[in-house]
Structure formats: C-alpha cells, structure tokens
Length: 637
Image (cartoon, rainbow, N blue to C red; front, side):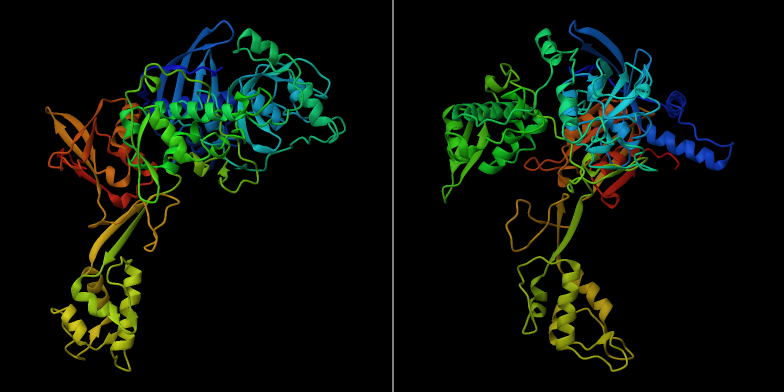
C-alpha cells in the first residue's frame, strides 16, 4: 500500500485525553484488555499496555497516497511518536476504518496481531509490494486469530519473533489443514519493512535481531514437517508461490503471477557496469546531500575514504538492479572500486574532478582529498532523476550480535535509537608549568604535554607521594610537605596538630591546578592520546546546552536552545524536528554575542517546549547534566 511516498500534511500534537481515548480504542479493537476483576494491578497493566501502544508524546497528520495499478487515491491519518530512547517514528496508520500498526509498533508489541510465518526468500518478495499466496505459508499450525478480514503480522521462520509485514487475511487461514499444494491469495499486504511508511522520516530503523516475547513465541510451525520436508518443502513453497503485486504496472503484475524459480547465481558484472554504478551512486549521493542541513555535516577537506564511504557506497544500487532474480536488500559483490577501471579511490576522484563534479588536492605522500563539491551542478540538482531505489537494509539474522534484542513490551533495539547510546563527555586535564616537577621525578616520569583524566592524575600524584614523602606511622592519609609541593601549591597549609598534609585535600588541589580540556565522544568512539584522531580535545570545561524560556508580547512564551554544535548536533535538524513534534513555528539564528568566525546558532520554537526539547536531546544521547534550563518567564514553578 505504501510503495509510493505519501503526501503528508502538517503534524499536530494530540492532547493527553485524546491520546488515552485513542489507546483505549486500540485496546478494545484488538482485544487487549487484561483478564480478571477490577483491581489496582489490572489498572496498572492497562496503563502499561497503553503506554506500549501509544507513547506519551504523540502527533498526527493527514496523508494521501496512490495505490494499485489504477493509482487510486487513499487518504487517512498517520500517528507518530517516540518510545523512550528512540527517534520519532510512524506508529499507527488509520484509513477506511482500518487501524494499522506499523512494524515499529509491532517490535514493541509483537503479539498483538495473529502471527503467520513464511520463508525468508518469500519475505524478500513481499518487500517489493507483493501479496502473500497460500503456498508461501508455513504450517499448520496456523494462528487461531488469522480469520478472513483480520489483520495479521508476517514473520520469517528464520527470525520468528520479529514482525516484518502487516496485512489482511483474505481467507480463513486458521482453518487450513495444509498450505503446500493450495492455491490463491492468503494475505493482502498493507505495510512492510522497507516501504515508504517505514522510511517516512528519511531513515528507517533496522529491524531488531530478536524480540524477547513474554511467554515465548508460541507454537512456531516447522518447515520440515511431513508436507514440507527438508528435501523439497522450501523449494516447493517458493516455486509454487504466486506473488501478486497490485501496485506494480501490468508487466510487473504478470511477472508476479508467475512462479518464481530458484534464485539464479550472481554473475560477475562487467567493468562498464561497475563504472556506471559508481558514477550513478556518486551523483545520487551528492544529490542527497545537496541541502543546507546535510551540507553542513560534511567537514571539508574530505579524505578519499570518507568521500567514498559517505557519498558513494550508501547509494550503490541493489543487486536486483542488475537482475530481478537477485536480492534488493544487498549490494552486488562485484561492486568494488578494485574491479572498476579506476582500480582505486584516488583515480576515481581525479575522474570526477575532470567532469567538474568536485575539486581535489594531492597532499604530501600522494594522499588525495576532496576540497569542495560543485553543488550548483544541474546533474545533481533540478535535472537529477532517481536511477533506482536504494537497497532495503536486510533484516539481521538471529545470530547477528551487532544488533541488540528488544523487549516485547517496552524494550527496543539499539539500532532504533537516534544515537545508538548516550554521548560520553570526557574531561581531561593538562599539567601547568608549576606542576612539572611532580611529573619529572625518577619515580613519576610522565609527559607534561599529554592530557590526563582525573583518575590518571590521582595515580601520578599517589606514586609521587609514596616515593617522595613520608607519613606518620599511625595515619597513612597524611603526608609530609616537599619543596616541589611547596612550589606547586604556595597557599597550602599543613595540619597544625601534626605538621602534615591531607592526601585528599592535596589530590583535589592537584586536579584543579591543571588546565581543563574536554572531548565529546559518540557511541563507538574512543580517545587514545597516542593515536591521531579526527576529533581532538578542546580547552575549557565541557560546555552546556542552554534551554531558555522567555515571554514575548505579553503572555506568549518561546523556547530557545543554544550550544548544540559542541555536541555535534545540527541546529537546523533540531528546528525541523521541533516544528514537526511541537506543531509550532521554529527559526535558527546566530546567538547574540557569538563570534562570526565560529558562530553559535540558536533554535527558537514557539510555546513552552522545554520538556520536549529535553527529551529530544536525551534521544540524541546528550546527558541531562549537560543541559541547563533557564526560566525567564517569571512564572511560579
């Protein structure tokens, strides 16, 4: 149904009372009311189910889209929201009295719909918009609730806990005694992993590896039963499958009605095909980044590897572009620069410079870097024509350790969060000249040019004190003063009763006497003082993101956010998301008093939106201690 991108009207926030009514409607329609008499425990369960189905912050927008071979217009409402620690995602779609959960909702609630199972090759065909035919089902047993006209979810038998598509049963699937050898359509697919609703906000989330379903996944049929044995069951299910594609043109539909043979082996691509693919991918990538928001994320000069990994590889065509028998979720193995006519990235970039697409520079050591891109090129602007649909991210296998599993009710895959984890604020310190003597003793030979963490400084000081000072036999927490300590801390005083210094007081002064530095790391990044890094520590204490509430024109309240750049957050992207989530106007201007050479931008949104801004920053991994709220409205808290 959502093979074509829907037209979305402006989003509007939903009031808490309307949200509860909407959630209750879902609970009633899907029969999710907990059993048992009225009690506090039962009420708590209802609240938990409600929050799992519909998060606290919910917005809605009307949409229209074209479906079917006749491009019939379908209109409805899409509901978007974000569960804790996740990005804003489309969660529910309502049209023609159908209340359709998306895969994002089903990943939090995998058992709210009857589950039907199919083979992975069949599932990949469903990702093209085809319907599921009866021979493609695995069973019996089939879910009892899979009656004609009821919504069902489709799962791969290889990953039975993760819903990957949603549709309406065209027959009474629960009453089938077998699937192999049967004919006809079993499920009309409405939404699937990889369609335009999944990709509504530009970047869809990768499917979780596995979901922890309470009580287990239930009775999962096996593919090697009496009727679908290992020798021919899967092959028969795929070959006998009729895949109808109602949203394709007539030629595609005819192909969908034909039996699909086993997937052909991947042929080796010609050099010209590889060259054309890399050339098209580059134009595709530059076109994608040809917006002020995304251009700002490219830090020129770009190394050859950064250019290729950012602007070329993600935009290579799927394997199905070269043959309809191949997968649309993977890249053809022949697509490597080594197999192209250029053989390496440097020659490829030189060719792009000859075409006038980019400007490059050859550094010492023959390293080629990209200095600039011709953003005015019509080939990536108004004249650009999308050459193919990008590959759909392949669902991870059950043994893929790179993706974390999600809980059935409230958990989530880490890949669905906006930052894949919290940002790490690394506080570092550089010794000042007066501390150099403490770093250069025979027992503490440490560099005075390096940056150290507070714990490392404590270790250096402890080594110095143990080797250069003495302590009373009855109290090792006291140390004697040395000439180096007296020079480093001229204002330090000894304990009047003992004539010694306290270790903990000295350790605190030692850290404060150093020059502070900071480094903000994203998940997966680390700091090594001995290795070169793209991101270097900056002097000063870690900055704060400031949220300011102000009153304008009497009673109107506005919310302003500044300091985002230090955390590598694009202010324009934040303004765009706040406009959608808050359904309010936003603007981005330079902060008054900031330097024109390194300007700090300020995002303004209408209304008292501090809580929404704090949640948005939290979803991007910003720790709460890095956010400061300033209320200038004068209202009582």
